[in-house]
Length: 91
Image 1 (cartoon, helix red, strand yellow):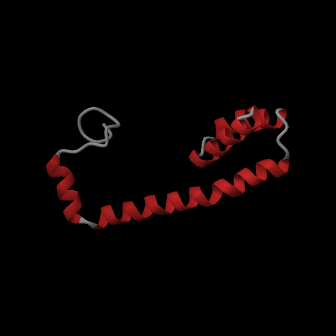
Image 2: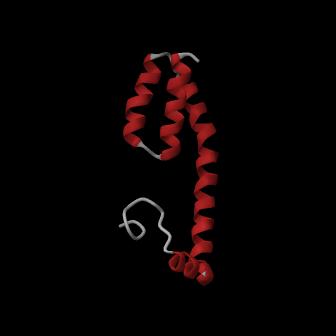
Image 3: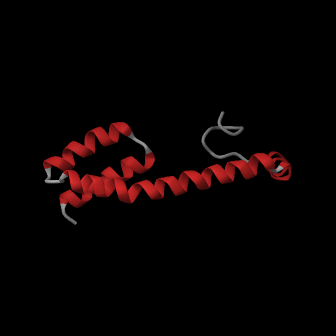
């Protein structure tokens, strides 16, 4: 894989996760490697629907979780944690 392709993938990943500092780094680097405005617009056109669908799915999941008392009781009773901190969830 050539360096420009790698850089465009990194631009796409940065857009997908919403990392503005990553975009500030990778977009100029992609331009240095020869990416045109059209190339960068194509990356955005490819990433935008994926990001939108992922956001919608997370929102739907959250709505289901917030509506479901049964799910809430199962999570609390199992003592589960998302793993992002020690002890209880998100601590």
